[in-house]
Amino acid sequence: MHPRFQSAFADLSPELQSALKPILDAEDFSARFSPEQIAAIKQQTALDEDALAFALLPLAAACALAPLSDFNVGAVARGKSGSWYFGANMEFAGATMQQTVHAEQSAVTHAWLSGELALEAITVNYSPCGHCRQFMNELNSGTALRIYLPGRQPATLGDYLPYAFGPRDLAIETLLLDPVDHGYHLSGDALEQQAINAASHSHAPYSNAHSGVALESASGQIYAGRYAENAAFNPSLPPLQAALILLNMHGESCTQITRAVLAESPDGKLIQRQATEATLQALGCQHIRCVELQKP
Image (tube, rainbow, N blue to C red):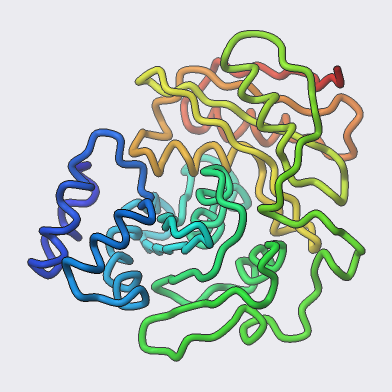
């Protein structure tokens, strides 16, 4: 079991500990649960889905990186596929505050990068801020997304974001989590290819400035993230943050990145390079390469 889970795990009920231990002890546990695992946990604990999601929140919050706020937020996103995904807030000392990631963004992006095509619900231990409500409004589930908070009745995103402004107001038809492939030509080594592939699946309907980042960790694993643009612009999630979310959910350290590649369009209306390089340097990564996207 990853050390970050041990304290929260100790406070769980014996039944839940028994059901979770084989999953958490697996070397390949990546802070997500398959439909079969969720079904087995429910059977062993007699918890319904809502109660189980609340019970898992302390484990999700244990994934937080909060050197600035010391305030851990956890989220559990429930996919329509039946898979569940942890998310947690992430802060980066030495970088600007704008580079931080909120727990809801983390859970949504974790699901997206894992191939989830739609979300049914998200459970979080603190009320979503306005930034996160707007970020979630980009999803193809729209304002029907169910939100669960401890001590409150279930509500929809529409309840938390009345009179919402979103992609549909701008006639955008391809929404976040919808499949998309911009078809960029793969080139270079495995790290570069994964960055380009991520850019090909990025969500940037407002700027068309597709971009992707691939990170090589100290273990040699590669984690790739895609740009997730938002109708309100400011809640957009850069590709580096998406890659860092995936790296963190796999239990690796954000300060032990050996190499990084950013792939983006040379004539895009937006540029990710400066912010990407500055944040990676703050995390101690000095081997950063930028490549231009090319259509086949």
